[in-house]
Amino acid sequence: MPDTKLIFLDIDGTLVRAGENTPPDSALKAIRAAQAKGNKVFLCTGRNPDMLKPLLKFGFDGYVGAAGGYVVVDDEVIYDQPMTKEDTELALELLHKNGVFCTVEGVDGSWGDENLGEFLAGQGEGNSEIERWRKALASNLHILPMSQYDGRPVFKVVIMCLKMEQLDEAKAALEDRYDFVVQDVPAHGCVNGELINRAFDKGRGIIRVCEKLGVPVANSYSFGDSMNDLAAIQAAGYSVCMENGSETLKKYCDMVCPSVDDDGIAKAFEQLGLV
Image (cartoon, rainbow, N blue to C red):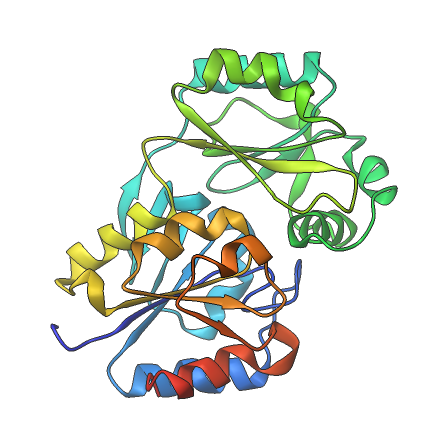
């Protein structure tokens, strides 16, 4: 498949408005046209499989999920690397001790601190991750109370707090094994991000898909909007940031396309000759 192009799309703030599950019609038409041309289109997201499931009905060729920790090509799982039980327990202990709000994500579910919704309601607009969690909680997108978490394997911990210093103790204990990926949007007054296992990231997920399909990484295209897409942006052969995205991320990208609300995916696909 040397001439095939592999296209990797972040979900929240890129393919859809943050927290939503239905792409614009223009994006769906572009995706189908790209596939009809012989290209393959994958989701590339921090969402776990359970939370990205509503999008699979639109006919993607697979996904890099859980920020690279769970990778599927067609219907085959090619990578599955959850956190260890010990690290999960240590992370939650130290984060909760310092007043950090947490959500843990497994393959088939997510569990969040019960007062997270109340915390988010007091935060401002302007951050796609906060919007995703606010809407996800409001629509009950399979996020169960943390009290119901039964210890099953999880891939990452989403973190939210008011000050960076609240992460210091957890960082001291875990930063050698986990990357603390924090968003670069300070206006909302809330620190939010994720603990990502250093064994994987979205970029290495893209490389794993390319290797599985025998497609040169140079023939891969990555679309994103926030700093948790940086690894994917840096790994792909060509990178695109949405106009509504992080100003910092735009500096790393080959192209900035119109926003998710302005048919950005469709316009970029056409400009790049992917359809």
